[in-house]
Length: 315
Image (cartoon, rainbow, N blue to C red; front, side, top):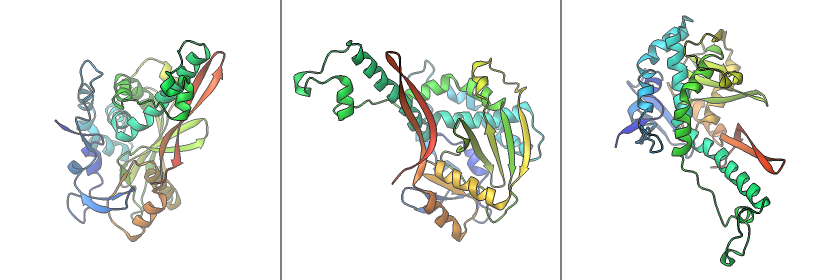
């Protein structure tokens, strides 16, 4: 089976250390193990791009041919603020792919699906459509069995991946036609980290989610998605793309790195080692992104609301 990288190697190689050749520094949040690695050694899964729910199980690989060969040139264009549609496509496409196929993304996107099934069970029970369980299970309703934990809902992570792949061009269009901040970091002592889920969740308003994505140790982007675009036609010319360049102060760099660590699934990568980095990661390792859901009663059923948040997660 092919070993598919869910974080592209072209992205990780931008964080290679000049002190130790073609390698990254890495720390695992789960056990704080520090090590050096090559891009080809990490962020990969056997047949990770293969999805059995699709008529063409590896169709996402065709999408990546429009992204990865242009990634480095796109980073260079963003750095000098000479941005064209191909560079927008490469960076937004990289983000859309990670949001679709990284293990963190699959975990996050299964939660709303589970909540929807639970809501449907409650609705059907309330309408008397589902029969009670057999006496061996106490004759309880499905809703009661779910609450008791006697029945659990299991969602195949490949299913939300399939949903993401079939809508990836729409996600690409939404990202690429939104407002972007180009974040420049001239602080050589506190360069940007990246991770096995290099899409840091940034909330300044409970109603909206922004995404901060490191592209290189001294360059990142912050995307403010225009959700209204999700209902409009796909346009990969990106006519609505808007951007501004921001020179960050030291405290702003530290806050972005905090969000990158907290949003990472397990692995945090960085270019050059320093004594403060392991302490910083240790302090922020007990967090991750979760989909927080709520089933709201509506008429005779439920409306499932879901929002991604960084939450405390004991390891």
